[in-house]
Length: 415
Ligand code: FNR
Image (cartoon, rainbow, N blue to C red; front, side, top):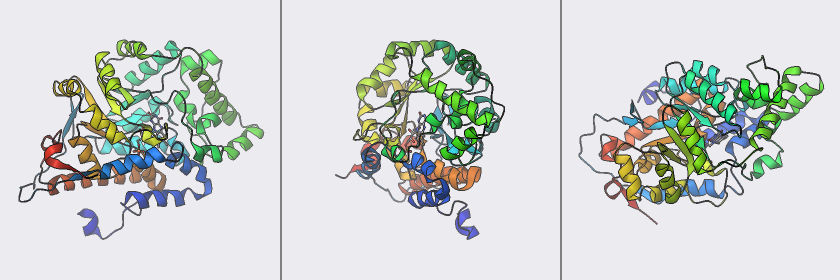
């Protein structure tokens, strides 16, 4: 209502998720490969499109003359009350689209009391992001190093800096086949510099005999040619950053593959919830529960890993059809978070109606960051929440317990 009353267009130029994407692209026109890295998916983007299309297969059923003047999206996640079920998904290399990078996203999330999941491939350190997040809720996403001593060092730093939940991403031990990036030969991890601060862990540095990096800021815009030029001109920071990134990749690709049994190591060494991200089947969801994980993120990485994979919302429906999973959710033992394809408030309501307890937003907040930094992320988050709350009222519900697992009342399948 404030937006209507102010008669001002939004900070980002639009609240329409598709238009937002176009504006972000225009903003990146000098370094379009960075935009393509965010926008892109695996293969022909088949799964990314399927993620979106599957939301259309479920339709909301509005009820009339229900007093929904007072509405709340309040949700409890891992025993903590939040004003909404929204979380910001872990997204790496945010420095490729805005110089304030993860610091801006973390600060915006904190203002809305939305958990910010810091990616292992962030362009800022665990400590710097914690500082930007202040009193805000924050979680740490782990791309699991092969060496346990490096893992332990990362976990220790995350814990010491107030990250409460550990999100372990399982679907990216091999990077997906992404033609958008292959066409432009653009891969931030390979160029290395972008992730220098996140991977500058003391144990890792000592292992590879690497020197510390003094500059907190990677070059912006993050253009490989610019980095190559800096290296050719003898820029020591750029050289060290690239070496660091490459050593990190080498470490990640060394050693033994980790299996379900190894999750125990993380459970034993993390005081707090451990959440497995990238689950798409009932079998894996039940195994996650059996081994003692506290939750899962039903996700296909926004369609960036397996081209042709099942839509994430379909996977959610399957997982939530398991009586064992539902009983564990109801007893408070297990939490299901959903991501991949969420763009509007009604998408969020549909995911909750199918059984998700929380939802994570990906690319849309990156578009906000690209266009307007912290203010852009703030606007994307607030408008998503406003849309969700308005939609809740319009379907005749006042809170999320009126929606959770109420698909027979709230949704209609339309094939
Ligand atoms: C991601 N995602 C991701 N996931 C993760 O666990 N660690 C990471 O570092 C990243 N990095 C990353 C970069 C970019 C540019 C994107 C778009 C995505 C996946 C992310 O957490 C989430 O699963 C998807 O973004 C959700 O899909 P939507 O909302 O983008 O459709």
